[in-house]
Length: 330
Ligand code: MG
Ligand code: MG
Image 1 (spheres, rainbow, N blue to C red):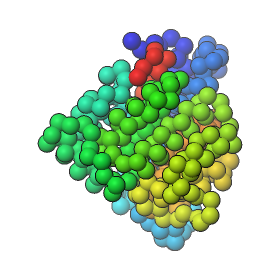
Image 2 (image 1 turned 30 degrees about the vertical axis):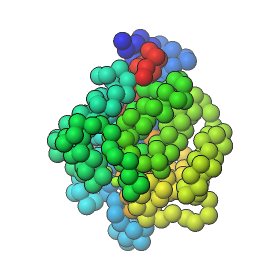
Image 3 (image 1 turned 180 degrees about the horizontal axis):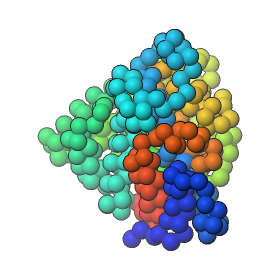
Image 4 (image 1 turned 180 degrees about the vertical axis):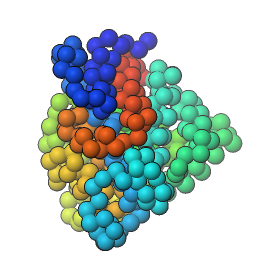
């Protein structure tokens, strides 16, 4: 049911930029309407992975520790507490890809399929996994119920960091449909109102950047709504350094960095050098910045350093999820 055609042609163009010098003849064959959309969707996915890989080096460090060890941390250099090879990503990216594959296989967001896919992901021995994710996936194994029990303490960032596949698959769908899809995936591991609010805000922000809206409009539409409905997320006053995995702190650091900067690179450097849960703030900020600024804004040195298999998977999946959205699902 996936429609290919113009979208896949544009995907090849977008993917090639990561692998080869730009080929102008293939660009000229892309559909003028879908190319910018696919460019931004691909940039959002590559931004997520790059932010994850960049931030992983300094995850759990304080800003002072980062300054002492790295000056300004600015390269996909690996290391960190996970001892990663340069360019490797963590759970933020690999869970997103697992979720995206489940959405593609089901033709939409099916909670049971998502839970099974995330459970299979956990069995694959990922390099890292959050404890709320682990606990609720074990609950799924024990009960077969893909919806975790609602819990006010499960306000971690583990569902929000993997929202991108839902944003892409539900692009152009009714907001209510998008929210249903977001909650179906999120509640597998995080059944929590703060997590839901963050997930939905991020999805609508990404979708509006894909649609061509600017940052001021997106902030007025979606960030203002988040702050009105969940005032805990207020981020204007105090600088959020060293953000924890609590979704409120994650979002505060991301939104501060995102709205205080005016390029993809500046945004990612600003957020990961705050330390704390830096792979996840990097991933979320990278997703937003990719959707906002597009592929041309991603530094070549970061695209070149990113794990090639991950780069290809993100590029391919972004196109397939967008094609699914055009086919009318979820
Ligand atoms: Mg991680
Ligand atoms: Mg993290």
